[in-house]
Amino acid sequence: MKQITRIAAACFAAAAAGLLSLNAVAADAQKKPDGVSAATKQAPAEKPDAISGATKKRESHSGAIKLTETAEGQKLLREMVRDFIYTGDTVFDGHKVKGGRQMFAIGTADLNTPEVITAELTPDYNEATGKFVFYGTTAKDSGKILRASRSGTGLSVAWVKQLRPNELKNYGWNYYDSYGISFKGDLKVYRGRDLTGDEAHDRPILDHLSHVMDRGLTTIKEWSLIWKFSPTLKGKALQDAKDREIRDFLTYEDVYEVIPTSMIVIDYFARPLMVNPNNAFVYKQYAINSNEKGFNLLKSKGYKAALRDTNCANVMLEPERSRYTFFDQRYPRTSPMNLLNRLSAYKNKAVFGSAKPANGAKPTADGLKIVENQYNNKGQMSTKAEVDQAVKAAEGKKKTYFWVDESKRASMPDRYMVTYTGRDSNGKAYRVDLPNWNRWFVLHPNNVCGIATRQTIEFNK
Image 1: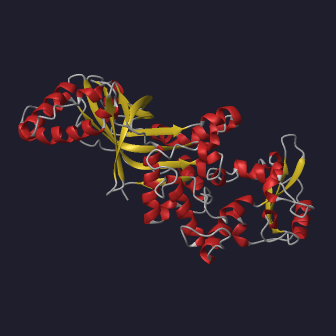
Image 2: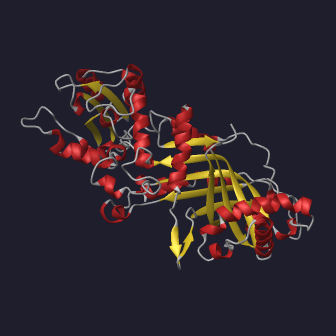
Image 3: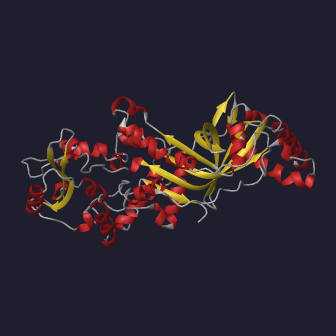
């Protein structure tokens, strides 16, 4: 249940935050929504409280390599979102249905009353601007969307890919492998009443809705047949046919757009080991002793356990890579454009200075500094004797110690060690000595270790 609670909180935090502080509006149930064809005005910004501030705190500890810090990384982060929610085209009764539609959770509110709905949205990504628009349709005069447009608070939206099929069976509902997005967005609603019959007024709306229909309506199997026109129609005749269909469609459906203003991206497939003084006593299986006679790292139980649970390394290796097909829809796994390959290349450049370093490559000075700062106490090491003395003096207290075991070879994971102390679930003081696996995996090329697992896109900055 703890795992379920954590991922649910991470993926739906934006939806909850957006519903906690909503401004009431003076309107009765019969009041007509204002300006539904234009972006709604957002409520005045409020000073962030301790809850909203937690997002930034989590981001700062989520990885050494933050995509938000470079233009290349920002673009990659946006395209990561596109690949998250990408679906390929399908065929229904012999007719092509465009891909892209996904089910989202949407938080709305009106008169300080929060509401949550689930709705299908189709993303439209503009590569030139790096911005998204999400299109949706709802039954004519649907209360929640219209009330949200009236309130001026916008929407909070969340989508999460929860579990891979093999995890259901083999990994005990391991929600830490999930990934997803949550975002706040402005809302535009288009209704039949917005079309007045005045050509000068209606033309921009009709032209825009024609694009929306091309992108959104065609992702629904039945409605894709509605938006299908004879190839003999050209120019004005085709425009007139589309105009008629739009006007007719708006007699029974409303069309709305969600324009993200900020988006939290959670990519737990890049997750390192999550060991700390609160839980280290349950992770003793990661321990190794490379000085043992006949020791073979790749066959050792500690290495196998650490690799299994270090998503960022395991996801790039077989057999796990063959199971991780979610990012292979737009580009095959062999393509340099495949999302995982691009992330691996980005990590390689950040740590090794090259997108394709050779096996055994050494990190650059700047790359090593990034890794040491994030995963190895900024390179400030103790000796085993110093750690032994400190642990004895502070028995049972939650502490983390970083030290070098000079008796181990430099190439071995247990050369650099982390000692965790605290008390277990029964109140018994414990000490757990583990290799600094996160440091070790990040300092190996061709994986996604080190990539931050929680990052925020600010679209208006």
